[in-house]
Length: 299
Image (cartoon, rainbow, N blue to C red; front, side):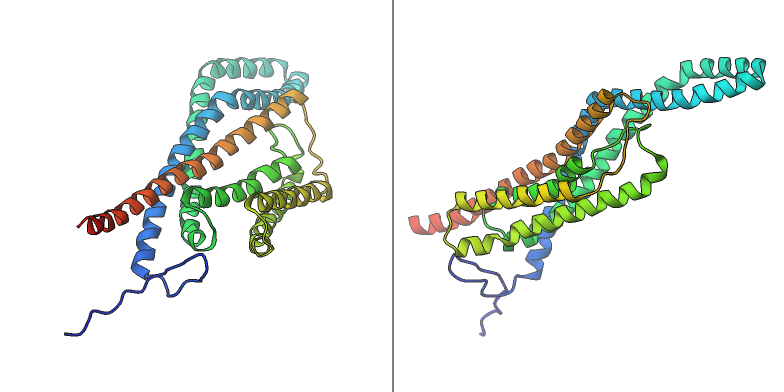
């Protein structure tokens, strides 16, 4: 009776490369498991980031929107009062009466929309991390926890930290509406530069290993490269020309810090929860594989 065909698998050691191709069925099962972990991580991190945004940043957003609408409303009421005094008084009274009931509902909807938006963003980020986790397992060293933080940390630096240093978030009412397109293009260019820096940092690892550097020395060298490249981007990018408008400088910077905190909570939360789930699954698989060997050795 002929032996059954061998199942394609991928083996790896510290001295050799992979000896055969990975099994497609195993790859699909791993992808589905990673996607489940990513969606769970995204939902959890999205709720946490959304609640943080509601508790910390919603009041600042309300202040910024009130200042912006107040400036527009004041100008409109001045024009109306100059031409139609009685009609302006009637319109102002109607607006005040409606404003007594609308703001409460509007604020609740805004809060729910903020949490819903962060949850959707978290689900998208978690799915992307789940897709990238499979290839990262074959390219990056370390266990599941370390690989997840390498991926999540690089993405957080490129998409959140570096753009926040160059072009921080702008609250409603600040900045010229006519320059939104130009500012968006500048922001996206910084994100692309951040991704290039992250790729460069990853590409440096093999040469540093071949150079015989210790793990601490490699981490220090990589950190210096990231800091130097990031500083070059901060200094080289042009000024976006965003002012404070009718808002105080304190309101603008409070909004920017709270926006950064919400984004960090989302991105790092997805990374942390996904890393915990992946590490738990990895340790469970190691225990499951070690039990038959231990039973065979005992017999």
